Each structure stands twice: as C-alpha cells, then as structure tokens.
Length: 216
Image (cartoon, rainbow, N blue to C red; front, side):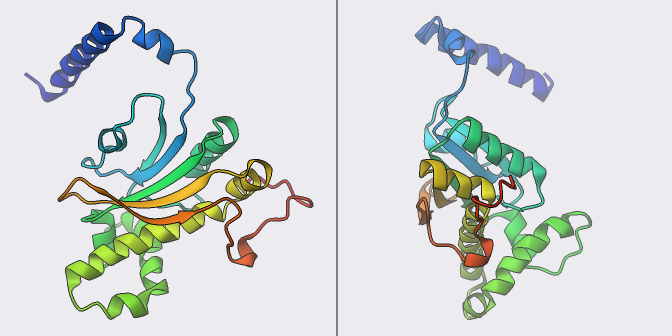
C-alpha cells in the first residue's frame, strides 16, 4: 500500500472514533473557532503542537516555520499574528523552539545552503547579539542548546515589537507572550521566558497609536 493511502485510512478511523464518542462532534467544530492560544513553532515533524500539549481541535491557532522565527518582513507570519490577535482575540502567544533544531544547528556553521542562507541569517544575528555568552560555553552541545533558548527569547521580543501586539496591549491588555523549548529526549516543555501585556521593551520599537494607526 502506498504510504499516503495509510493517511486516508487513518483519517477515516479517526473520524469514526470521534463520532463514536460524540455523534455531533464535527457539527460543533464547523461554525467557528475560539482558540485561546497562538503557537509559533518550528516546522520539525517531531514537534506537533496539539500532540505535545494535549490540546483539542479548535483550542490552538498554529503557525510553523523553520526554527520558529518571527521576522518583520514575513507577511505570512504577520497575517497569522494579526488574525489571531485582532479577529480571534487570543490570550496567549507561545513561541516554541526545540533542542536539536536543524535550523539553529546549521546557522552555527559556515555551510552554504542556498536560499536557506537568507532565512538562517536571522539566527546568525541572534548568535552575534549573544556572542560573548555563547563563545564562553566550551561544550558545543551546550552552546547549541543555549542558542536554541536565546533564539526563542529573541523571537518573543520580535512578537512584542510588532504594532499588532502593542495595539492589543493598549486596548485589551493581552496577549501574554511565552517562550518555551521542547526537549526531544524527554517530551517535556521548558518555559524560559514570558512577557506580560505592557512589558517594557526598548523604546525605539514602541509605537504611538495616538498619532499612528499603522498596522505592521
């Protein structure tokens, strides 16, 4: 049997299981969604947001890319963020990286990876910001793990520096921004950062909404 056909069969089994538990399961799912969380995570196939958090359908809005980056020129990310914050009124944004991230690891090397070079450049910038701390770590694996953590922290800051989030903080006093790292060896999530509404950020990134309604 072709491997993709197994996915279709698994889908049918999943539907039957849900309907056995609750006959109108999908009728309740259809009209609208009201997730409380936005997950910004890595596209790694081993880090499935709903699976590792035990959340059900409709509880989490999800955006994934290589190395869970929040880039201010990425209109895909910004569109997801704006919809989650302004339309869905999510309460929590979770930026989740993971130890053993291939994107972070490749960014630590001098490999020429073609188009991917442009994306990994943002992680190299994170390394440069924290070079003194990272270079002082003698063990390469420990340095790798720390860069994973620092990358998550920097992406949380990038989320907070958007006008989308700052406007929500001013109007609604949420969302909270959380930085987590998933450990592939243990299956556990580690909380390494949290930014509360109206968190103090560098003044140069702060927007004045009395004079400007710029969206991004």
